[in-house]
Every structure is written in structure tokens, then in C-alpha cells.
Length: 287
Length: 334
Image (cartoon, rainbow over all chains, first blue to last red; front, side, top):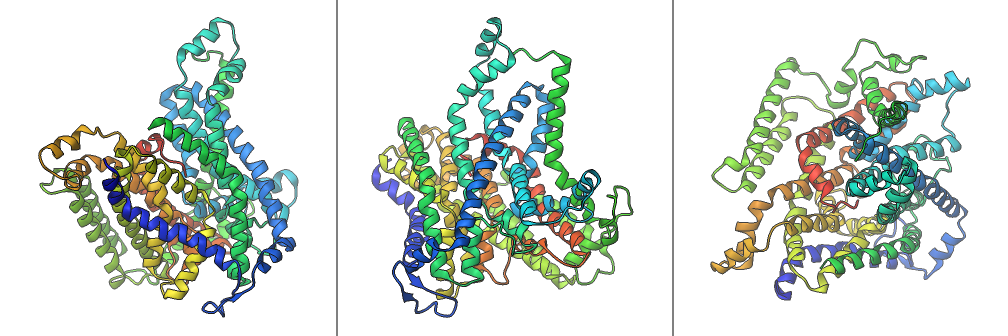
């Protein structure tokens, strides 16, 4: 296929992505230099970098930043290690039973995030099964507080996001040559040593891939936090996306919200750039 | 590979897997159970597992008044949609292109759903359901049409421009959606498109386009070049060859990608929440049930959650083999 035909075929898709992804991103940068509320959408006022200064001095923004980072630091390693453990165990089970397990494991992955969050929340509502167990074991009622909502967000993310690493690792384990395992068994390697010296090195590139994707997903988590803090917006369990949302839609400071989203985009480049370079190298080699 | 024979170890493995499986499905199980309870039963001190089920939560959610002969209405609807599903599955046996069959089935199905409020008094929840269908189907049709052209070009072109487009698109897809959605909101306000289906559709198409072209490309790469080359030797130009030779054998890949587009469009929350005021989709509508003071809100929320999950579970169940194909094609990167 020559260059001309390529661009002819590409043009509708490219046009859509340029006008609705590249252009909005530039608009966002422009909006971030304006003072804009719902009242002056049509004639915003240019304020330079004042919105950025405002964000950097905003204590609540830094609280949201800290919680987002804590969330990533706990949720991502938890998802990956649980996913890996279950994938390794699943690999040991006979293939007939696997199907049932996989179907169960994929349920949280398929269901709409908002629905999944509502369902997890049901367990903790008064009359919910976990709330009941909590009372039976600890003797006190489960109540929604800042701390408990934060833990709930983590539990939900483990529930909803673990199937992805699980399935990727499981698929990766299927490509592991049997000879390697057999040879190591003849050498007298124990199961644990096989995991340590054969499986983990074999899956190394997948660990990087899954890790980067999970970090980016955890970074932009919104739906579950929104639903879980809807109970009471005063909770300080806000992540950066939620705080940006509230700044735009409740406080109506659109310029400031755009400044925040520009800042969050710049911050995620730390992870995104290595990820893209890696993909670029892969794709040019495959070509 | 030699399997583990030690019974003790095997028991531990099965126990761990089962506990994790329970962890995965308990929210579904419990929410479904709660959705068939009265508020009083749902709030009981000790969880009830055996009780007299009631459908009140569902009828409250969907209907203003219950029709005189609910069973007849239900039977007619099941018959119509069963027939449509059957026609859709047999699409390849018809003497004309499959695309027309799928479009016909979708059009008739939607016409039936559209006409229901004329016979039964429905709640606004039903309107959100219709909005969801309009938005997801619209997104799928546009997204797949332009995505097929692009995916095909990317699979066949070997220049560096293709790789650069793919990687850049992936980069844009990985950014937090907020960066696009606030400008969309501003466009919407300026152009008067705010709170319309068309704005939701074009923005959902754009946001999911990188994913769509990656996935379709991986399917097109599995189709040997010789197929369209032989057609082009016979005098067809590339576009004709693409439409008449490639697309007919691409249907499994297209259906698979359409399924993922459906899941993405259906589950999108942030974009729809910001760009609409009243024309919500189900996903946004049910988030309203997240909190409430009256004791009835728990069972209503459960019914809403189950109602929004069931369409997706039905679709996934019907197309499970395509879903697996998509997952294993290696293109699904969130």
C-alpha cells in the first residue's frame, strides 16, 4: 500500500482524532489561562498563570494528590501480586475446572464500573452481609467515615482491577515451554523455586506492561470514588480526578479545573513516556 | 507439565481459588438477592437468605403503572426479541450482505423498544435505557466504519507513519479523560450541543478511536494480503477490493471490536455525566441511587444496579466466543 492510499484510508479516523483529541487538549491549555465560571462562558477573562498558582497553593488539591499517590502505591502492587498468585495457582488446576473459575474471575471486569461499585457498596450498607459480619466480629457498627471510605475504595479496586493482570499473566504462563519446567524438575527444583527462577523471569516484560497500565488506570480512577463518596461529599477521600470534577462542576471554576487537568496530564507523562517508547520499539521491530 | 499430586497442596490451591472466586461473585449474588426484598427485609439485623421475593423494586424503577396483563406483554416482547436474535445469528445465510441484516435487526429492535411507552406507562428510567441504546449503537456504527478503514490501512502500510500514528493514538488514549471532557463541555455550551445525543456519540467515538484502530488492525493483520491482491489483479481498485473481499471475511473481528466498543460506551460515566443534564445513560442514572436517606433506597439501588448489569451480561453471554477472541488478540490494552 502506498503512502497516498494509506492517508486516504486513514483520513476520517485521523480527522476525528485531531479535532476531538489533539485540539481539545490545546483548548484545555488555553482555558487554563482564563478566569471562567458558568456565567462568563462566552467572554472569559485572561489571567495568565494565576490559575496554576491557585492550584499549587490549594491545600485540598495536595490532599487529593497525596491520596491518589497512596492509592496507586497500595492498589497497584496488591492487584499485581494477587493477580500473579491466582494466575500461578490457576495454571496448576486441570483445564476443565479452569473455565468455571475464569468465568467467575472475569465478572467484575465485565460489569460496568459504576454498577460494580454500587454492588460492592451494597455489602456494606446497613443490612448488608459484610456490615453484618463486621458487627458480629468486632461488635461495632460499620459506618462510612473518611478512613472506611478510603479502605472501601481500595477493596473495590482490588475487586475490580485484579482480573486484568490475572488474565494477562495466565495467558503469559500458557506460553511457557513445558521443557523448561520438566528440566528444572529433573534438577530437583521445588515448586517455589520454579516460580522464582522460571515463571517470574519469563513474565518479566508482562509485569512491566501490566504495571504501567495499572498505574495509569489507578491514576485516573474516578467512577468508584465518585459513587462511594456520594454518600457524603465532605469526606476527604477525593482523588485528583474527583477534585478536578468538583472544581469544574460544583465550584464552577473552569479555568482552575483546566489548569488542574493540564497538571495531571503533565504528571502522568512520567509513566506514559516510557510506556510509549516501549510500544514504539516493539512496533518498529515487528514491522 | 507434571501436575501437583500432593493432596494437601492441592486442597490449599483449590481453597484459595474458590475463596477468590467467591470474592469476585459475592457482590453480584448479594445485590441480586437484595433487589428482590422489601426495604424491611433488606435492612434486617441478620442477613436474610430465605424470604418471599418481591418484584416491586423493579416495577417501581421501570413502570409508572403496571399493565393489566403483564404476562402477555412480557411474552410478546420475549417472542419479538427472540426472533430478532435468531435472524441476527443466521445473518450469513441471507443472500445479501450481512451488514444490512445487522442494521435491519437493530432498526426493528429499536423501533419496538421506542414504541413501548405508547402501550405501557414507563418511568424516566426507561428513557435513560433508550438513551443508552441510541448512544451505544450510534457510537458503534460510526466508530467501526471509520475504524475499519484506518485499521486496514495500518495493517497494510509498512511506512513509519503508521507506527507513529498508532503510538501517538495510544498516548492520547492513556491520558486522563478529564483533559478532553472539560473542553468538550465548553464546545457543547458554545455550540448548543450540550445535553444532546450527537455530542455524546461523536465524543465517545473520538475517545475510543485509538482503541478501535489498534484492535481492528490486529484482526486485519491476520488476513493474508494475497486475498485482496488477487481481487486487485482482476481490476478492482483498493477500496472496492476492501469492501467486497475483505469486509465479508472480517465480520468476526468487527463483531468482536463492536462488542468492546459497546462495553466502553455503555460503561462511560465521567463523559456522559459532564456532557448531559437530563439525557443520561443508564450508567449515570444509576449513580443517583448511590446515596439516599430513606430505607427504601437500598433495594431500589440494588434493582437499578441489576437492571443496568443484565443487558451487558446478556450481550456478553451471546457473544462470549468473540469476547475471548478479542481478549486473546493481544490488542486489548484498556
